[in-house]
Length: 297
Image 1: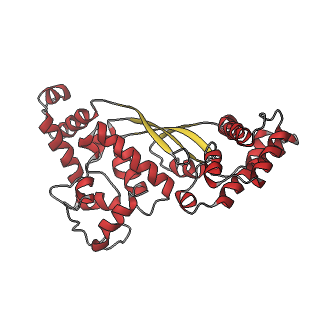
Image 2: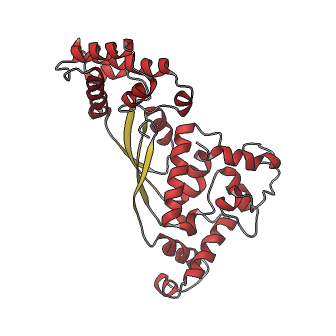
Image 3: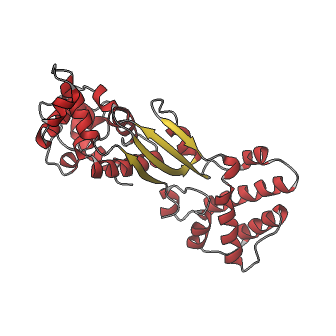
């Protein structure tokens, strides 16, 4: 669905599980890396990765890299870049006009007009759309070309919200028509405008910080949506590292166990929480309900 954010895992070290497990064992063995590695079976790898979870031994997880691409709103990207142990390359807003141009093209099609030739004509076109009798689904398809839309807006079929985004975009083009620079005119654009960002994180940042914080029900919906979708992709390539990962409640619970449980085991109620309350103060009997809520976007 175009109105939602997206995340795509682009690159990772294929042998990250083996590298991490071997590095973990190297902290306890006098043998060199290669001699440890050549005798490391799949079962050994699973056991060592599980031990890292239980013991909270995070440094071996840093011998990895995961690169992913996120398409989201500026609301979300500002939260994402607060994670310090990561690298980011973001589409300059000066060059993100392609999303707005797609919106303008769709507006022209919906109204049966030729694409506008000037900024002033673009502003008038968008103002006409705001006043038109387009139905909600048409407005949603239009606005989704350039903006991320909260699911609650879609559920409530809030046309005023969508028209507000269009009205702001019209003001943006009106400013450009009046000679205001792109750099200054974009102050008029809502934070819902789409952006694209390339992110690289190592497994430690993902397992101990990003996923626990952003998969939690307390996280804002958009970055939570991205975190859960990223987790699914990570589990599909490196289950030994990421299957025990989840919101902070899962991390806290697994750190208190001799045998950790996977996130799916918790979600399917095949593993019970034993901690008195989660780090966000949710009591034990409410954690599972909270966990299911977190992943339900």
